[in-house]
Amino acid sequence: MISDVPDGHDVLLPAGEYVVGSRLRLRSGINLIGSGAGSTTLRLLDEAEPTFVLLSGEAGIRISGIAFDGGQNDLAVSLQVDGCTDIVIEDCTFTRMGHAVHLYSSTTASCSGITVRNNRFSLIEDFAVRVTEGVSSVLIENNTVADVSKGEAPSPAAFYIRGVDVTVVGNTVESSADTGVLVAGPETRNVTVVGNRMRTTLVTVFLGSGASHGTIVGNTLFSERDFGVHLFDREGGSISTIVSQNHLLSSGKSGVQVEGVSDFIISSNLISDPGTRTGQKVQWRCGVTLTSTDGGGAASFVVSGNIILSEDSSSQMNYGILVTGAAEGAHIVSNVVRGALAEGVRLEQDLRAPYYVETDDAIITSRTVSTRR
Image: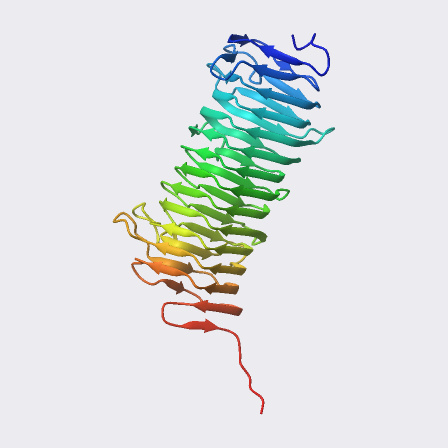
């Protein structure tokens, strides 16, 4: 059917189960349309090639209304999109597979203009959607990820991002054994994570390891054992990221953990009950923690207008805001902290000018005021 349909037409799959024993290759301008994810199923034959639908160097394809089932193949990849443009994947379900949707650029063709929306993922190992280096202009919207378990990847995630101009918006992650959204890599930039609801075992949103220019706004986040948001760079690089208007419902460790990065804003977040995991060190039991890596401490940052609350008996929040390294260019103002076991704002080392910090009972600033007669 795929080979014979004329260019510009649809391949329509009636209700039923279609067992795929060899790789299907889609063509440019040909849409693959099922009767609905509850009616039309493409299932990978046991012990067949892991990738069972391949788009390579194609353009203008829509895939919708299909249930993709990886069968008994732990490494199954239902859709591998290689060096394609203008691809839409919508209203499908994906179950029993390693990477459900894998986007990447080849040595000869870039991958851009990809939309993944209104899909449901379940029984996934490692990644529901994986965006690798060289991919740009991706929209991941209104998907539901029921669960992601750990297979071969060291850090599995519902959405794994190593691309440029990627938007992750309005998705629900019901459970992930590790991370909800993982944004990393020196070529990764302009990633927006907005309006998602996510529950994870470990970090809910990670951004760093060279990635920059991120926007993490308006999300509802819950981490059972780790950080709600983790900004990290071993080299102490500029991250140019905004973390704002999120509701961090609860976290096993600190609500927002910042390690060795500069140029960021953490503002107007509601951070509830951080530090629920017992036996953790102090710098992992705070509303916001700013600390150092080998590349240096936090620099050129704003932490303002956040509400940080410890109200549940399981929360062991020691400080609302903790600065452990010799931070530079700190601006910490107008935060509300309630329920800290020790102090609302704690500075463990002297700051480097310029700085302006409001603690519980003082304003600490490097500014000088001069008068002239």
